[in-house]
Length: 115
Image (cartoon, rainbow, N blue to C red; front, side, top):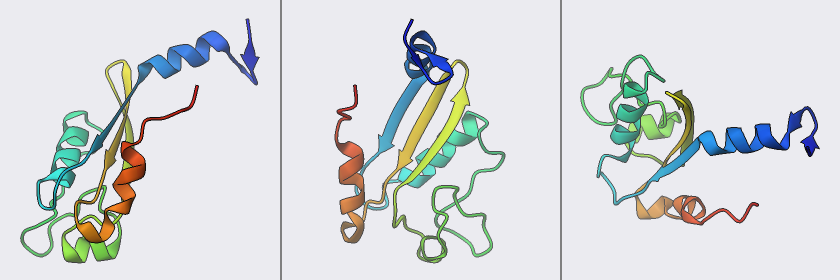
């Protein structure tokens, strides 16, 4: 059996098979951060859902962590959340929708070429 450090080839394949990666991509104000937050909440990765818009003093979303994002109520950078749900490990990428920040999601939408 081939080993990579302390992990066997079988262990690496087993862990890789558990992974599920999703990027939430859409136009501005479509609810990408809200959807990301709802998925994390339902998976019990977070205890309370935040909001991107609404009354002052509301809790911000986990993926919109920069002060400028919280002040403006928009995503400026992509944010990756990882959490376990049942037997899978989810990698969830929340992407910005505004044209000013459109370069960021492009890299997320490219298929991986890793073996």
